[in-house]
Amino acid sequence: MSNSTARVATALPRRYMGQLCKHFEHKLAVQLEEEAGRIEFPMGVCLLRAEPETLVMRAEAADAEALAKLEDVVARHLVRFMFREPVTVDWVREAG
Image (cartoon, rainbow, N blue to C red):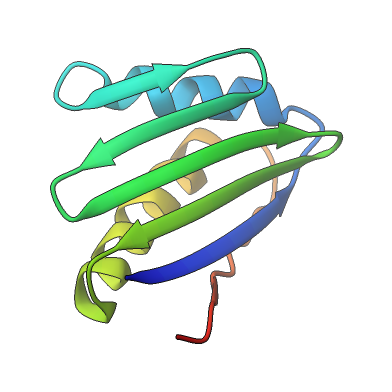
């Protein structure tokens, strides 16, 4: 299993978590709660958590190639939703 985490600074973490979940729920299995979300992609899972001033995203996939695809899809959509804020999504891979 390959994993990575991105912490994105934002004043509206719940808003963007909700947008990501709602965007994908028409095609994928999605769970959305007050402070957490889960999106099941064909290549892996993205776990979302809204913390004060931060959206935490954890990507989990079977291998590094699938993880890279998952990171790319999630980051591209988040950047599009956050067009009013300057945003950088830096994924940090876990050793393993």
